[in-house]
Amino acid sequence: MLKSLLAVLLATAPSPTPGLDQSLDPGQAQATGRAVLDTGHVDIGPRLRDGAWTIRIHDDHAVPPVWREPADTVLRVRDTARQTVPDDPAYAFLGERAGAEVHVVPQTEKQGVVWIGWNTQDPGVIGAISRGITMTLRGAQGPGAVTVFLQAGNLGAPQVLWSTAKPLPQPMWVETNTHTHANWVFGEPGNYQLAVDISADLADGTTATASTVLRLAVGDATEPDFDAAFTAPLAAGSASAATASEDQDPSSGTWQTPALIGAGLLAVLIVGALVARQSAVRRRAEREDFR
Image (cartoon, rainbow, N blue to C red):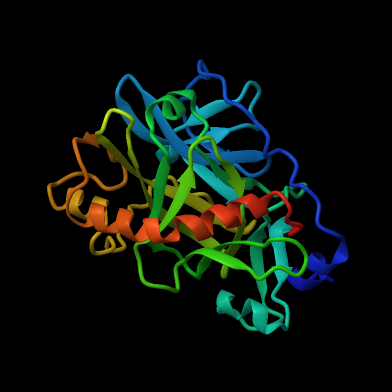
C-alpha cells in the first residue's frame, strides 16, 4: 500500500535537506540535443552569459553536470512518485479528495524520483543581479492541477508557492545565491507544460527578463512530448503576455529590457510585499522532512 503524505510527514523528526549546499562551475557546459530526465537532481534557474539572460535547467545528475535548454528537456515523474492524499484538512489546498493517488516530487530527494528545485547560483547571475529574482508562474496546461509548496518540519503548515487552481500570474521572490527544493504535486498523469518568467533588477540599474515553458511527463504510461505547443492563454499582466503581443514566441523568450514596464512593475510590487514571508519560508526549507 502506498504511504500517505501525512504518514510520511509524521514518520521521522525534521532533518536538514541534503544536497542544498552547492556551488556551480562558471565554465559548466551547455548540453545539446534532447533529454528525458527521470531521476537525480535538477534545478530551474536563470543563466547570464555574454549579456544574454536565459532560463535553463541545471542537470546535476549528468557527469559532469550541464545546463540544458528547457525546450529540449522533459522532466519525467515516474510512478515511483505516487502517494495518497491524506484525510487531513491541512491538505485541502491540493484540491484532491482524501485517498486519491497523486504524483509527488518531494522536497527531500527520493530514490527513483526526479528531484526538481530552483537556484540562483549561476556565477554570471550572482555577479549581475542586485538582490534576487522574481520567478513567476504565468500559464499552465495539463490534465490536472499542479501545486508547489514547502513543508517546514513535521507539523509546520504547508506554504503554497504556486497553484494552477488559483488565478495567474503567481510571482515568487528568490534571493541571490539561493538553492531551494519544494513539493510538486500533480493531480493526474499526463503531459504538463508550465510557462515561467524570470526577471531581475541588475546591479547596473537595468532589468533582465526571460521566459520559457517547462515540460513534464507524469506517470509511467505517459510518453514524453517535446513538440506539443503551449496553447494555454498567457496570464493577463505578465511580462510574457506583453511580449507575446509583439509577436515574441512565449516559449523561447530570451531578451533584455532597459527597465520594468507595465505589469512587470506591478508583479515586482506584489512580490515586494511577499519578500519577508518568502524569505522566512526559504530559511525553513532546509529543515523540512517531506519525502
